[in-house]
Length: 139
Length: 132
Image 1 (cartoon, chains in turn red, cyan):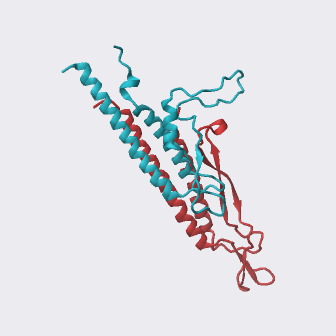
Image 2: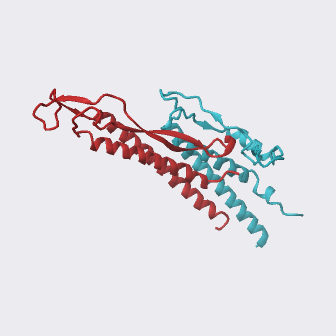
Image 3: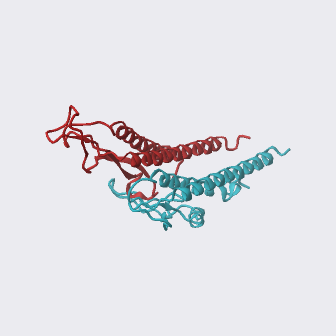
């Protein structure tokens, strides 16, 4: 039997997945200007990978929640900047900045917050429906 | 004459079940709006309701604890169908958030309508019982 309580689990999983995404965006943005002395030490942009989890064995009902399968580091090369007077500069006079694309991160943030809002809306609607179901036959 | 709740409530009890099942599916579509390779699913309401009205669906018997349930409950018998995407995205996700949102709110209103119908049926029953 289907029941609406499962819906809180589904939307709740989406909320936590989207908040992980928001967290990684915040971390990437915060570290976007961090300078380091070698390409290996430079901060790398992190991105979560979402995965859907079928709610019941066999998937007869077809509903699925979301989980974060892992957080991957971007493999793009860090940006090298020529700054010979910088204290962290290597022998060639280069410092390395993270491979964070700020514009991409901003778009990512907006998308994540929209998805978050959508799921909150779903939960609110479900809550109202459940409350009304509880009042069935009482008036 | 025996009072049968099944007859008194009519189609609305079944409809409510199918609606809540559809709500669940639409919510999982919305939850997976950013999941790569997720395919949006939905049920054909008419088919599911028809199935629910025919009474208990035929379920396979489980003779071993390790057997998977085949899903005999009303409304579950109809397999969800995959949506045909109008704008498929590169990551293999076929959820159209706007479409799902519209379907979700439409379905929520219809759920409330079913609740109202059920309420009025109960009210009718009560009036009949009181005999005022």
